[in-house]
Amino acid sequence: MQSGYGWSLAEGHVAFAGMRPPSRFGANGPARLRRLATVDLTAAELAAIRAMLVDAFGPDVDEAFGGGDWEHSLGGVHFVLDVDGEIVSHASVVERELHVGGRAVRTGYVEAVATAPERQNLGFGTTVMSEVTAYIREAFELGALGTGRHRFYERLGWQTWIGPSSVRTPDGHRPTPDEDGSILVLATPTSPSLDLAAPISCDWRPGDVW
Image 1 (cartoon, rainbow, N blue to C red):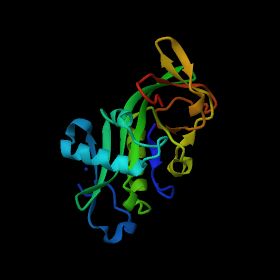
Image 2 (cartoon, one colour; image 1 turned 90 degrees about the vertical axis):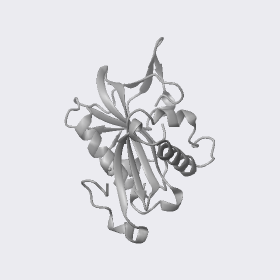
Image 3 (cartoon, one colour; image 1 turned 30 degrees about the horizontal axis):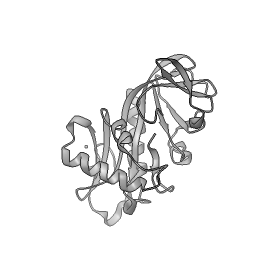
Image 4 (cartoon, rainbow, N blue to C red; image 1 turned 60 degrees about the vertical axis):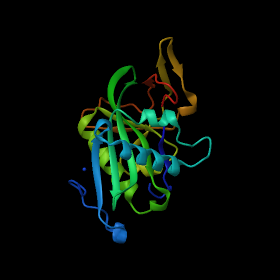
């Protein structure tokens, strides 16, 4: 559930393929935003991304970016923004199956969203998440993420799920009340009719299930 804790609250592949970098980047030098599968990232890039995430989320035990969070961010598509060769912002999208009101929905689930602490409040986070949002709308029936920073995502079109949440386990559905109110979803052109007050469930995985 590492989506949105590594930001300053205000903010949140080739030089901005299909995008124009925000003018606020100013003297930071040339910026590029890349979209890459995990298998296409080099070992050095993966190490740099992970180090940036750990730094951005900080040492607080409740918000620290751990090994399980890293594993959850792999296997899908990474959005990597770098300036002068330094990775400064990141998010990843992995495919999951959520059930909404009992209906299975192919979902792009957002993980590992963060901007390097010294690069926050410059628009990098907004740029990355704008591209993530566009990608999910094109590729999935639904977008979802877990966060405590609703406002940042809501201004990009995400909505808070207000219905009860649970995880599907081999022993059946297990309620996840601590996650209620922290799950955001993004409707896409192929989304089913969404009742934000309906039950929502995720597939089980080790560590944080949401």
